[in-house]
Image (cartoon, rainbow, N blue to C red; front, side, top):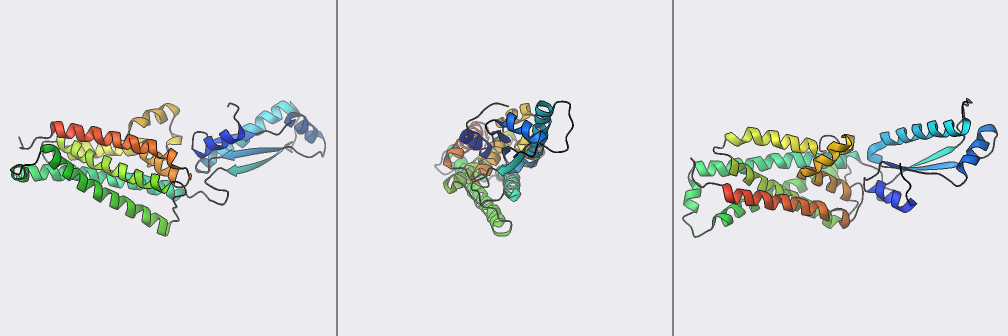
Length: 296
């Protein structure tokens, strides 16, 4: 625990950097001791918490009761807490309600689209086996241009599919983009590009259409799990939360959480978008250097 300015603390909870903050009123210790032994008014403790981590509220309330009773009451027993609490979820607006489907659709979309990326790579290898790459190389087009055209078509399909997934969530499950709409579409485009170039990367490492699928599926499942798509990343140990930042899925899921139910602005989306674009460029560069046009 550490002290915060009230506004800074609320913003940290809203951004998911803190699970909860406690605000103690002035003269809390004296007023709580007085309320313990008399009918004096109870001081009110404010608790602001992340609604996606509701269990944190119960933990904070328990710890607060333990420490206050130990400090104020000492060994004495009491059936009445010498204070009252107000618990306020920190969201995009006071009227907004937390919708767990927002995180679920982000995670489901990330997993589904990544598996589509594997199919992009397998399709490239199938085209090579059929000799289509040799025919296309007869045209005055560079290797980078041919691979880029495949990446662009895969990214377009992925972006449309991701938009359809979220549209279904908005239509049937009340998912809303409470934050930056520009950031939301930027995340869709960035993740779609990363997924498509991941497919190129898979193709560059495989020799036959069947060879890379099993390994790519396993790698995808690991990325999805570490990214918090199955369960929120906050349930991971602290070291694993830090380690999971090396996978693009973590940045994508956190970014979609930020611009949907958290209601954050473009400032919370641009960094995940840049990270996704960096992964996309890395995958594309490796694919361009390693992809072979003729099957060995």
